[in-house]
Length: 378
View 1 (cartoon, one colour):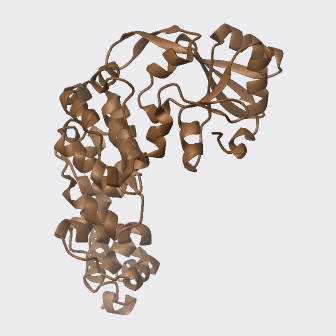
View 2 (cartoon, rainbow, N blue to C red):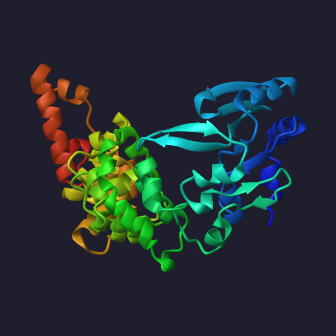
């Protein structure tokens, strides 16, 4: 089996592969790029594995006129810039000691050792420069069946890095066959190791949760995550019940909207959201749980987030969503008809002017954005 030729034609890839092979070393595509190429899914980053040591990778890149950057030299990773594109090249490795969040590694020349330290069998696939797939651990059969399994003993893989618990649910949502169910051994190992999630940085947890919630339908994976006791340590207070109806009501694969469906005690802090993300999350949640009309939501949030807030409102209430597209559009196009100058002409100034303007805006909102300038001034 071979991966699609267009992946191999990516700008800058051939010179990197040729530089390593020309020095007598193996150069193999590995991981997500191979998996996605075989699934026909979009390929973003391209990772390369090699039996060349990092100093040798640097020397070969320089000899080929390429730019090596020692981005992770202690762990064997050199980024080679070729035709303006970065290519991460990592030496085959084996774990010497693991600590639950990172590992001490030794370099290897054995592809089987390198494959054995990876997380899931479908990620332990390699491809030659001509696209020929190499499958040291039987991951190809799992990929064809859309079956997510840990490499080796699931508990051991999790103890090496507890982030793999969250990755298990994320990869299940993205790549597994929903009809096939979740791997019972993997699920049991995640449940047993769930206390390790609390030792992870909130930034790592947040990144994984947002990737999980960006899947086409993350609801089954999140429900399994909650059942296994793995959702609470990642997002305290979260409730997954509104997520499935939200997914059915809204085609948006929007992690912040879906996070609003989960709720939680303090999701912005728990997941280290950016200020913009936290502000948007609060606005969506407030819009969904409040009583504002579709038009008012359109004015406050814009058309996209107003539709999301209404879909979330329906999901939380367990009711079908309103057909409110025209009202949302009306609100999104509306503009408050008064300006401060209008009230200043009536002799108002300072705090009194501000209070009057605020009161007029409240009357305009109460009119569902229909009151005119003349009506507000009267």
